[in-house]
Length: 291
Image (cartoon, rainbow, N blue to C red; front, top):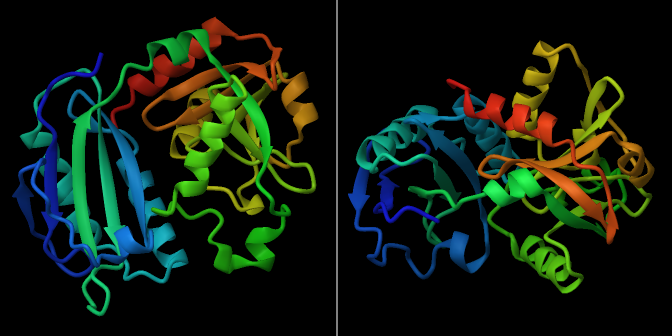
């Protein structure tokens, strides 16, 4: 059950050039109807888990925030301003077991030169069932070739944008097919990513994930899992993976900042093995991070 702790909302005064923010009542209307983040989905975001007052992988999230802004030709986010707002939100929020912070950054009101930035914090949902029992996924064709990031960079593959209508539609399609989530594939047959997650496979003594050159979002949680895997004697790699690799994997997960590692228990209706002990170890390692 989600905690009833009051969410926190902070508006950055100048998210690309200086520090400073204003606290806003979460229930109050604060967005301008002409903000391009609303009217066009023209912006980016990051979601950061907070455990015991510590924002997990904050530097990695801020680095990816910068990368997404560059892909959209947005003014570079002022790193100190966003960092200040993150810790201010944590200081203002009631202490709960797990919460998350969302950074949102848009091109701003149409016709102005000032981008809009805000920080939202609230308790996380309870993902115990997904982490323990696992999730069923379906493979869906994203409709792009694996070279799309190189041939068509204007399609913004690999940027974490506010334009999430396709991702939401894909999850609804998964639900229509009796599944929980999606793994996208390229038109030439490679595994890509989930709508809100990264694919991680265990193949023998290696942890592998699809190569980011395929036009997918670099995974911050996946990076942490690779660090944990190396400490435990495994090799790690970024590779071009296929559905056949998923089928033969010893274990497979969809991983994300808030849900953490959710083992895949079925693909397109076909059950697969869930390594409960290894999954528990991975999620324990993620929960013990201090940065």
